Length: 287
Image 1: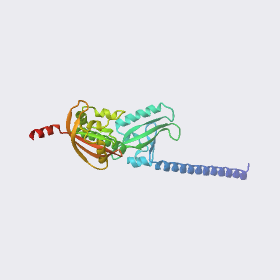
Image 2: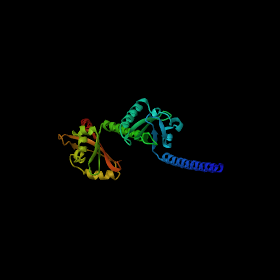
Image 3: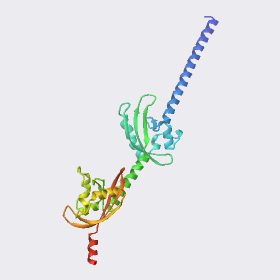
Image 4: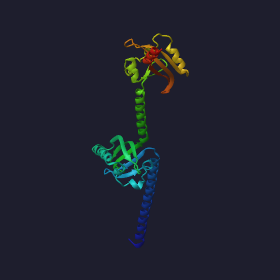
């Protein structure tokens, strides 16, 4: 082969090499564009998305995680996720990783986790961990939602309900709540004492207890249903009459206060029943 042929062959090889380099650059550029596109999608979702190796080193965190945790990507990517959890919580999470390690690719575990933000605030994350042992992810992927406010609201609501229950049962007078048909919705402990029957049990029975069975006037001097209509129309009623207790026939004097209240989107009737038997007896003696 002469020099011209060698030069020509070399130029062809160089040209082929340049074409391969250009193709690799094109593919690399296309891969970067695809990676940027996927990053943009993951950053825009409202859920927290993270990925980490089996040794718990974080390899990916989306923008939602960054926004809610207060950490930058440089703070956490390449670091162990243990810095995001208190020791006792990380120990529990590590056991989850161990369990998933013994399971096939794609196995999942869903639970809540308590983490810490950069400024030391506690957060509660409800999410799913997915085992991924095939490239490009070799480890775990996590998807989660920050439910801290929801948990806090539930705790506040539960505590409020408990506090209201304590107040409801701490009142010295009998309290009843019933609907316009007289079906009892709630009753306090004093009602149980006054009428000698477990009103709470009756509220839960399939055949609802009727309020007029318990606090109707002994002499039937007026129709309670008519009074209820007036109360639901906006009037506040305060009445005095005698009641004959159905359980033992004892007759006692009461003051009854009725008004409408809004409960679970419906108009109901709140009834306060005060036993004034002793008060009436003393008054009569003084007279």
